[in-house]
Image (cartoon, rainbow, N blue to C red; front, side):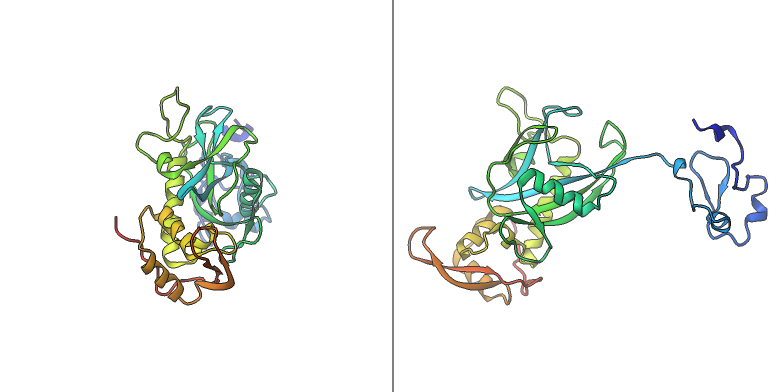
Length: 302
């Protein structure tokens, strides 16, 4: 408790008794947390003081959590780590960490992405080059009870990349793996060792993951984001399997080919062919860079 916590007034601030004489000309009048005085921002400005008292507000931490999605063996998969420390020790969770004092949120997310996957983030809307990954902010999660240690606000980010190698655990995680999104979001509760009962993801990570998956499913309808799951050069068949994995549907190959090759700015022929899918050589394409698809690739109703 601070020394002035028992006082009805605070030096440099008007008390509740003389608040009327400061009412006129005040820009704002908000009651400071935990105090009986009326805090007036205009008074602080007049005195050349800071517009608020930082000690009047409880501290809290900020983290970044990553929804890292890729397509492996024709299935949409997410990166998860098994927590090696409390809270939720032994449970699977999304990778992430605390934001450093001198870090911007985007910088913190990019740092965690490099640490967890070895991938470098590139600007949204630009094609991936080399070991790059699409990275964008997903949403903010601030339930006061989401972390039992203290008040923690998480700013989640969504990362998309082509088929990635097996991850390596680091930090407070004792193992890491790619897991099918369908299993992680199942009603049975996700993944665990064979000798244990399935358990949901730690914290509120199941909700964060579900939001990230829905963001990806929605954005590939009207943007070229699906190409972020592909290598720099890819076939229409490989792109179709990305849509099928993300949407969880089976698409007609001929209709899909007609749509993607007929959408302006979606795909650009690279000039090469490949036989990596077997059969006759297939034409290779690269992302055309169109920010929006017109007409959009509408998701089939399931």
